[in-house]
Length: 207
Image 1: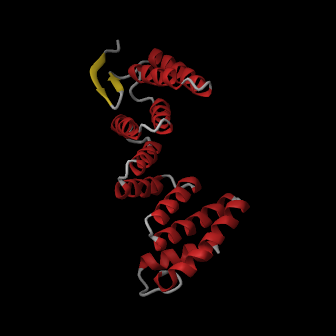
Image 2 (image 1 turned 60 degrees about the vertical axis):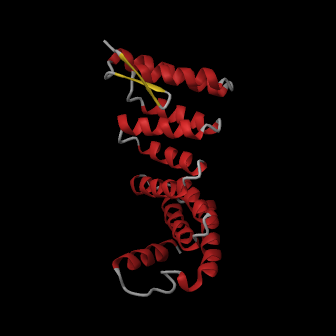
């Protein structure tokens, strides 16, 4: 038997652990929520996501869907709460870290957003999030960090065989190398530390 707790956290009512029936029902509710989103019925979609989470407080797709819905609606504070609840109940839901980072960036919590996105990327490196992080570095005037992020994009694009992204990333790297100049730890290394050697190796690999 599932008994919902009376305490809402981040717009989500949490419940006792799921059963097979709850899992099936919550999956159907998430499916309905996505369909309502596609029909631009966001209020109904949000209700369906919350209903799914009442049945199954560990339903990762429901958290991610609800969080993304809140971000699209401009309710960044609520989105941050949803992602925080998600990580309390499903610590392995790494994409909730990226979602919370985006919510915090929108809320002006830039240092916290960058730190969380960086941590997320240590678990799940991917081109889209790295490009986003590179943009954040650029907005904050952190050209060396932006250069490093684009170098990582180069490496991932090579691995993925994505020629379009690789061309874009290499153009960004060349432009930022000019901007950064002597502050570039690859082009102008100060010492042979393991960190600098690792960065240089990545840059050489990516071209």
